[in-house]
Length: 174
Image (tube, rainbow, N blue to C red; front, side, top):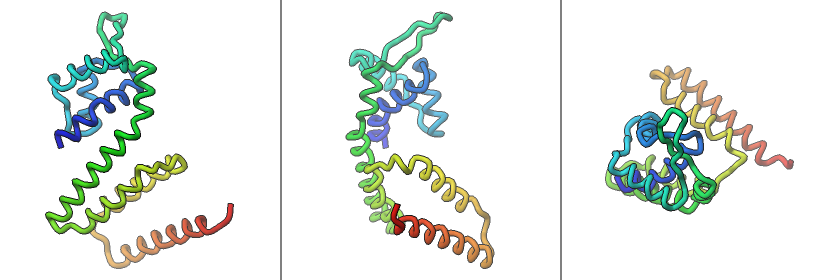
C-alpha cells in the first residue's frame, strides 16, 4: 500500500493545486480529509514539493498575509493532463493486487471486480455523469437494512427494468 500511495502523491498534489493554492500543511490536511485515512508525512511531502518545484510543475507564491503557498504551473497542468500512462500503471497494480487477494482468500466476487477494472482505463467522457449515479445506486443498495422478500423482489424488478431500458438504448439506432 505504501508503494501505491507514493505513486499517487505527486498527482494528488497536482490535482489539489489545480483547485487552489495551498500550503504544505494544507495539502496534507486535504489528502487526509478526502481519503479519511491517509495523511502523507512531512518527510515525504516536502521533499516531493521541492522536486516538483525544481521540475517546474509547481511554484511557491507569497501571499499578501506573508504566508507562502504552492501553486500549479502550466507545465504542472500539462503533466497532470498527460498522466494517463501513470493512471494505467496504478490501475493495473490495483487490479493485480485484488486478483491476488481474491485467490488467496477464495473471494470470487473480488476477482470479478478486479477483472472489470481492466476496462476502466479506456475512459468514457460520455459517462462522466453516469458513473457517480451508478456509485450512488451502489451505496444506496448497501445502506439498506435487511430486506423482506417482497422488498427484494421489488428492487430486483427495478434493476431488471433499468437494465432492459439501457439495453433498448444500446440496440436502437441513433
